[in-house]
Amino acid sequence: MPYPDMPAPISMSQKEQQRPQHGLSRPWQRVVVRGGIILGLLWSILALSGSHHGLDMQHLQTLWRHPSELSWSDLGLSPSMRRYVSFDLESPVPTFVQSDARCEPGYIFFTPGGQSPMILDSHGDLVWTVHSSAATQNFRVQRYRQQDYLTYWAGKPFGPGYYYMLDSSYNERYVVSPVGDIYGHPHDFTITNRDTALITAHDKRRADLSSVGGPQDGWIFDGVFQEIDIASGELIFEWRSSQHVPIAHSYKKFEHGEGTEHHPFDYFHINNVDQDVEGNYIISAGHTHAVSCIERSTGEVLWNLGGKGNSFRDLGERPMVQFKWPHEARWHDNDTLTVLESDGDHHPHNPPTESRGMLIQLDVPNGVANVRQTFTNPGRKTRFQGNMQLLEDTGNVFVGWGGHAGYSEFGADGTALCEVRFSKSHISSNGHGGPSQISKGPWIGKPLTQPVALVAAGKIFVHWNGATEVAEWQLQAQLHPTQDGSIADALSDAGEFHGIQRVQKTGFETAIDTRLVDRNTKFRIVALDRKGNELGYTNVLELKAPWADATGLSRLQLGVVAGVCLVGGVMTVMSTLHLRSKRSRWSEVVRRDEKR
Image 1 (cartoon, helix red, strand yellow):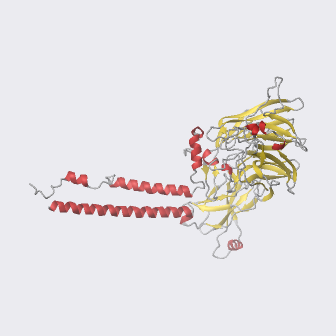
Image 2: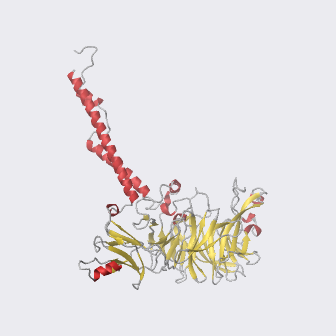
Image 3: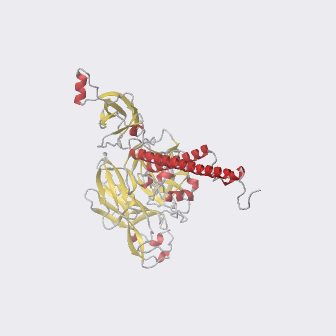
C-alpha cells in the first residue's frame, strides 16, 4: 500500500496518455507533412516570382460575381498563358472553338489586359509585343502616306492620353495629341484618306441638367471629336455634343452624386468617329443610343439612326432601327453602315448581355434603313466593348467581342466560320479591363533589333520579336582550329561561320538541339526568309552552359529555390533535434519514476 504523501505508480497506459502528442504518431507521416509544406512554399514563391501578374483581388471578385463566364483556363485546368525561355514576357493561349479554311489570313492585333499591345498570327502564336505600364487600347494597322503603321492610344482613362504611330521597325514615328485643354479618349483614333487623324475626346463643362432631374448649374462630360493634321498637329475641325445634341436625348439615368465638377454627368459618351465619301462625319454615342451624321463644315446633325431623334421611321412612325449601345459605327461603300451593338449597362453587379454586329443599308433621302445582316456570338457576353470590321480580300466580317470574349469571323451571308476565345483570367486581369477592340489584317514587321538566343536544358531557344518574314533558323558554327594551322584555323580566326543545320521556325520561339555543336564551339543562329536570304543573326554564343543555365530556371528563380531549400532544411533539422531532446527528457523522467 503506497504512502499517503507519495504519488501512485504510473501505469504504461497512463504514461502513453501523458506523453506529449504531436498530432502525427508515425515518423514517416511527419516527414511527409514537412516535405509537403516545403514544396508548397517553394511552388508558391516560384509561381509568384515567375509571373508578371501576381494576385489580383479585383479579378477574383469579378470571377466570383459571374461564375458562368469561367473557362477551363480560369479554373487552372488548362494553360492560359504561354511562357518563353529566351523572352521575358508571355502571351495568352487562345482557344480555337471553330476554324474554317475560308477565314481570311492575317494577324490579330489587340491589347490583353488593356495594356501592352500584342500581335498574334492566325495560329495563335505570338508575333510581337512590348511591355507597357500605361493603359493601352485601340491597337490596329492603318495607312498613312501609303505606308502601314501600328496605331494605338496610351494614357490614363479619363485623363491624359496620346495616339501613337509605329513604323514597320516598331519605332515611334508620330504622336498625335488632342488640341486644346481636353483629354483624348481611348475609344477611337482613325486615319482618314486625307492623311488626317480623327480622335474622340471628352471635356468637363457646366450645363443645365434639369431636363434629366439634375441641378440647373451642373456639370457634364461633353462629347468631343477633332480632325487633326498628323504632320503639323494643327486642328482642322472640332465638334462638341453640347452645342448640337440636347441633354434630354440621353437615356442615361441621372444618379445621386452625379452632375458635379468631380463627377460630371456623362450624358453623351462618344464612342467613335468616321467619315463618309462626302467628308461628313459619322459618330456613335452610347448614352443617346444613336449613330449620327455631322455636316463637315457647320457641325449640324444631318440625320440620326436610333435614339430619341431617329430620322429613319416607318409609316407608323416606328423606328426602323434602334440600338441599345452602338459601340462602333463605320461607313462603307454603297451607303452601307456597320455597327457593333454591345451592352450599355455599366453596373458591375449586373451580368453582361450578348453583343451583335449589324450591316445596315441606308437610303438617306427617303429616310429608309434596313438591317441586311446580323452577326451574333451566342453565349459570349461583354459590356460596352467590341468592334466590327469588313475584311477587304474575302468580304468576310470580323467581329471583336471585346474584353475576354475573343473574336469571330463570318461569311458575308452571316455563316460563322471561325471563333477564338481567351481566358478571362489574363485578358482582363487588371484595372484596365481588357481590350475594347480586336482587329485583323496584314502586317510586315522588320525590327532593327537582333534575334535573341539562349542555351538552356540542352537546347538553344531563339526568337526575334516582331520579325514576320522569318521562315527558318540556321545554326552556324565556327570551325575548330587544326593542329597544323590549316585553312580551318584561318577561317576560325577570321570569324567566319558555316551552316550546320537548318530548322523550320515554329511559333514565336524555336528550340534547336545542341547535340550538333561541340563544347567550346562558338556559334550563332541566323534568321532566313522563305528564299533562304539572311535577315539577321544573334550574338555569338559558346556552348559552355553553366549549371544554372542548364536547369532552365532564371537566376532569380534558382536563388529562390536555394533559399527555400536552405530554410526548409534548417527548419527540419531544428525540428528533429527539438523532438529528440523532448523524447530524451521524457525518457529520463520515466526512468526516475520507475526507480521510485
